[in-house]
Amino acid sequence: MTTIDEVPGMADETALLDWLGAMREKQPVWQDQYGVWHVFRHADVQTVLRDTATFSSDPNRVIEGASPTPGMIHEIDPPEHRALRKVVSSAFTPRTISDLEPRIREVTRSLLADAGESFDLVDVLAFPLPVTIVAELLGLPQMDHEQFGDWSGALVDIQMDDPTDPALAERIADVLNPLTAYLKDRCAERRADPGDDLISRLVLAEVDGRALDDEEAANFSTALLLAGHITTTVLLGNIVRTLDEHPAHWDAAAEDPGRIPAIVEEVLRYRPPFPQMQRTTTKATEVAGVPIPADVMVNTWVLSANRDSDAHADPDRFDPSRKSGGAAQLSFGHGVHFCLGAPLARLENRVALEEIIARFGRLAVDLDDERLRHFDQIVLGTRHLPVLAASSSRQSA
Image (cartoon, rainbow, N blue to C red; front, top):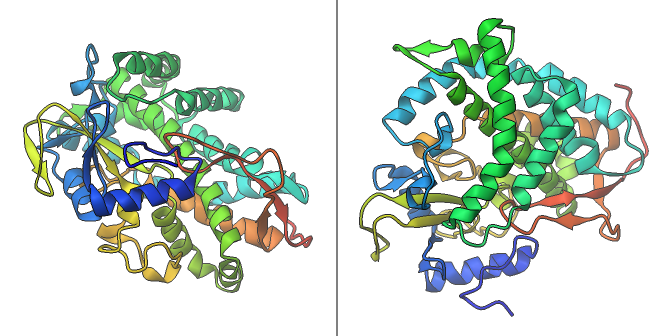
């Protein structure tokens, strides 16, 4: 049995949720054996994520020998973050994202057309869809898409026991450096010969005299390529798993597709793809009356915050009607670091669910299939999700 001093793996979701519940009640601010502080309650997680002056987003501050990564927007604090976000946002606009809907639908239909009555949702749709979309958005050739999957898979497979271990930073760099070097070459090419793609817009964008150099543009593209497709891959699997457990919502979504955005939002609360977010303290502080020293890592448990009854009534109940968005929705972050890619993830998952329902009616998770496999760290979800089409009806694309 897991004790209060042992963090269960992500693969045992029941044990993890039980542990988080116990921590919210008994030790809402807790230090582990590596010196990392953990925060569990919704109000406290919200406070940490909002207070960028005290809780820095740069993990390199507390990792020996590590240095900041230019352009890695989720690791940069204000005021530099504001300037960088302005430039990036000028290229990665809401219009750019909304204009992708027809292509997202086209790719989804094409991928589902090749699915049989029994298939792995991740291999058939949840992985190739976001990789295709974000790679096309950046202007990257299809022949390289499989390599992006290898890089992201290697990243989530890295053993993450002690997040402050310099050896961990080196292992992450070993995975990211080839990808970033590849993207830096693409940035240099686009600067010399721009095209109609996001990388071209990034290297040419300028706001208030601030522009991105090739390293910054490559690092932002790296973050978008990795986080963008991992989030959608895991979230789509979590949506299908959750609907399989609550089948009445398949029918509700089929009867009224307008309910699908609320389903996506509630799954984000119920099973967030990234259940934790890290910050580092810039000075001695306290959370919920517990002193925390300067220059330590603070791990905010978004999954725990999302299951806090002080923020959400009956939090262990899946209820798309609860309207779990707005400030209470922490699964894409909170405050100035709210995820730039959130609209794209929401759009991809909405369209994917619409097309799954149009083609199959619903999907059932095949719990007896030995291919079913959960991630054990970093993300909450399935690496492979075997499903059965619950209806043999087809609609032509």
